[in-house]
Length: 118
Image (cartoon, rainbow, N blue to C red; front, top):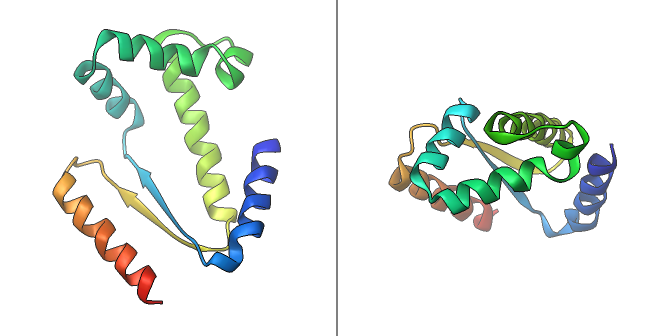
């Protein structure tokens, strides 16, 4: 609730700027996280797992290791989606499950160009 209140206060402060929120999501969060762990260095993997499990929600819920980090990410996604639905601003979800970077780059440019025209 503390996070939701904070985000809603920020949204109120910036509403006159006519912001647009782009939320990038994946169909399978666990697959995406494990893919990132395989593609990056062991140091990065250890650091990101520690980041999610040794503070805040992860620490409070005694999450550890890869499975714990995934649980934290799932909880974070749920909170983000709840906040997304509450926000009264231009917003768009972008699903990048297919990892087609050029397609997403083009889509983002189009959405931002449309936003700038309005």
